[in-house]
Length: 356
Image (cartoon, rainbow, N blue to C red; front, side, top):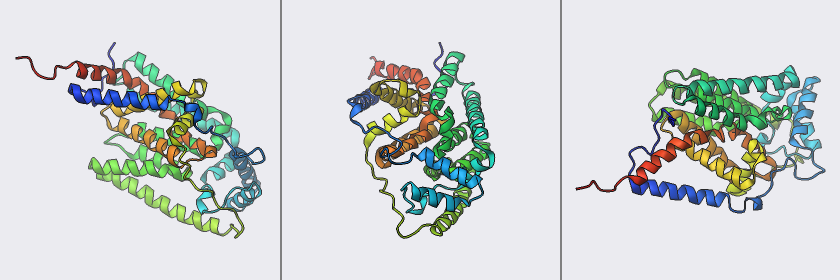
């Protein structure tokens, strides 16, 4: 069977570099699968007495739907549940709650499913020219596994779910000659969750590197609009906070790679697998994305690597749901692994010196 009509980064490599790549990959997998149970367990609340984040979001949406202003509702509910209100970005942007309140949870659940279906179709269209049907089907199964956690009715209450779907769609829709669908999806993701900003900056940076100036200008415009929105948000939050309101404990959890991988597994079908196996598959998927010599694969790789690093360095055990941002594409890179391994194997078999 043809392993894929795409180029990997290992085609034409010599034996030495190929051995180094394989050795590093084996070492990383060994590290990730070594005693992963020692990593902190992701949890939705820090104690049984505390509201879950999901309940907090539901309470705020209910209040907004009843006619209360978003900022008054958010401040009151976060204060009542002993959630921090300082700094200002501990209060979520109003986009998500306002739309939920206007449309209702059943409609929003339907929109999550519709957006997930659009995401699958977009990746099918992108990959169809380069993958034969068995591998193409496998890629859809893998993206479905990544979407598994997002399709639960309650998961749409997480702002990260919408950012995840929109950014995965952004990567699939982007074309070098037609960037506006990707720009639109990225803009929507950023207006829902400010954690989308690093990936939006990466998209703009890659456009600059590739000398696609109109696209780069589009990403810059999105960041400028968001900066204005965030400034207003900070001002409005400042109107409702009180001196005695609690401050955030910070985002310097340093919980490590095992926690990041365990969190990703928890929000995907990886929750059904042993921790060591899920961690190994996630790393192999990341390697698969890194192996493909295309712009969309590079962007997917940066998304997964970047948000994985964010989880490892900054997340707390009760903010594990940041992993939702990387969930849709987290296992899909496995479909590129056969071609990458084949090219590495050819490199390692290559005679270092031509026969005389």
